[in-house]
Length: 372
Image (cartoon, rainbow, N blue to C red; front, side, top):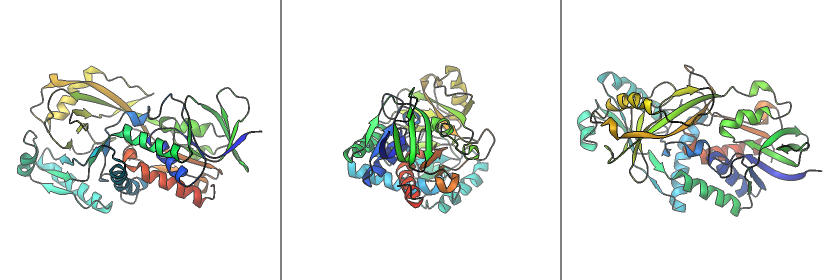
């Protein structure tokens, strides 16, 4: 006979912790299953820690809606709990006159997403704000900011645990079997299920596809192919050339090599886009030349010797090179027909920004499908 529980959340990154906290607040019994020794060691540990405004996503998409809603929820959550954050703003720079049309298209896209505070600045106005930058003008996004993502995850976990949730580290799943009485979970080398849950939420990030493939009888047409898009960062020694985040015009697969800051004002550049066959977190020093060329388009005064390898992350893409950007996929029984399972696929940027809204979406979906 197996033990029974209301909800199991797979993955203790920022998305899993947000989902677990939101479920726990509803009074459900929640177990978070994490194969690592600590929370937030995957995608959540390897990003820019940017709170995005909601500029880039396709209007009407889940990604656009949850980014804008999540941004507001996140700023308020930080305010109420004293989590370090800074609404520093960002500039999306046009580096030649031909970019003006792209900037206007971005502005209109943002308006369609509910982001109405973008302002076009002339080259002279940009120079007044950030004297070391070169531009032909830029879009100013005052709603963009930075967050201490570790402190945020710590708060989510603490709040989840305060409402009865528990977390099991160093725990790997080997099989899931959905039936009339719930989802039976088998762990590690166990030969039989040891736990049954009414709801299982797959928030496993880079392992979300592998987890879905463990679900006995799960229809394969609802499991996407996973592509690994690596992004490296280089750190800048000494003073930052800007007090705001500086982004170029977006490029296929990413937002371009941009200047971001930590909350202490230290600058770093990245991420680039490198398609790889498996997760790989080494930053190759030789990539610095590519970075320097991209950076000098908006900061001509860069001294390449100030750049050093930082860290790398891997985006869990569900579309390959050259394909249109995919929307978030948050899918329950109404989509795939398997009771008790909610899968999250392709939760890349702006996943951190959207995390609290994603959690609300998961709970809404589970309640609508009468899973919980």
